[in-house]
Picture 1 (cartoon, one colour):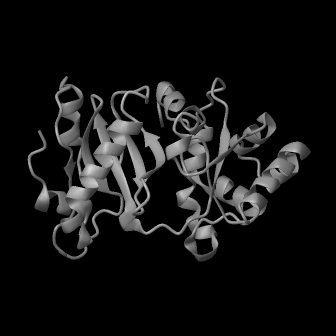
Picture 2 (cartoon, rainbow, N blue to C red):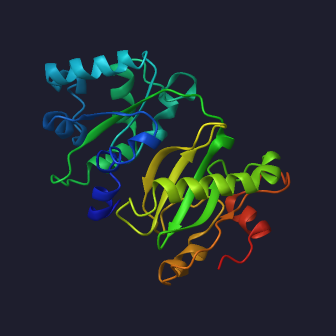
Length: 265
């Protein structure tokens, strides 16, 4: 579970507006208290839709309709990825309010967020246009002491042959994107941000998140990253883009890191 300050700093309703111009289009709807209470409870006798105020239900339907009945939903911090099994085609696509509430009520990820009981933080739904995104275009960027230190594919460990040739371009593009749009504008000095890169467009922000021992660092490990957090190193360094440089078959993340990890200093 996220700490209180993490809940505040990494809530999409806090960071979206300042980075709206470089983020995926998102519509934010604050959840009424009665809906939050229902989502926090284990009472299954009443459907979530039945407790929704008429105004909120109308606004929700209108947003989904404006997104062509093809939307992606998350709360302030997470998407209900563990509810994919309940979606058509395992895509987690929202076509109506029934889809949306099904994903929210069957997701343990969402339940954990709602169980935080932090009344000082309003709960939101974040709805985005549905996009079919190639997994090779998704990257996680690791920022330590306001320096971009690591770049990793989110689809790890999967081999993509073009990374070898395009690696320098990926590094340059994400480094410039970070310096021009994010550096000095995000309230933390250690964090991760996720992007989608679709040439020739500039990268688009998907999310921001904290760095801790529970963060999925994909091609990197917490054991590598942790010492850097405690080391004040504001000097300029080029980020490491770590990816599989050969097709070594199916393996675990630990096996992949063991095979290709270099010193990360």
